[in-house]
Length: 100
Image 1 (cartoon, rainbow, N blue to C red):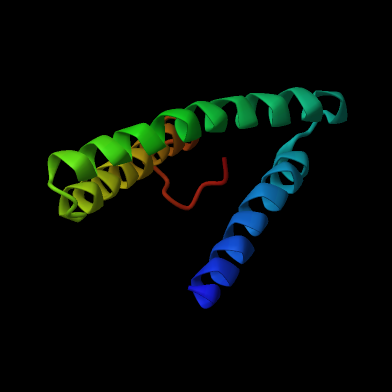
Image 2: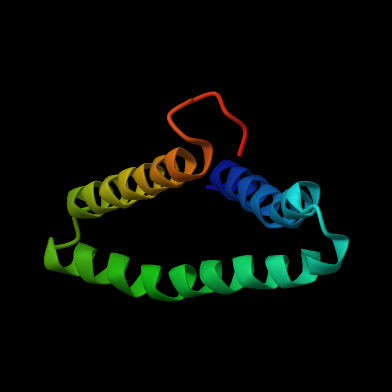
């Protein structure tokens, strides 16, 4: 459990600290970095707020088993990746290697 806690802390720390740095790196206008960081964390906060009750409801409905939750997480990740691909296609055109 200690190893898991250390790995989770390392991963979540990297996620929280890297997002603002990446947003600042891709922002051409330095005056809008704060707005973009705030918007990003506002969207993330909504997802974090609703994800734990949904996960608990899925596990409770399955009688304490996590298979339904694993399937739900996989479907949500696939949906997110698909949306990213759609946005990349809309902004960058049919060239997969185009920078957006």
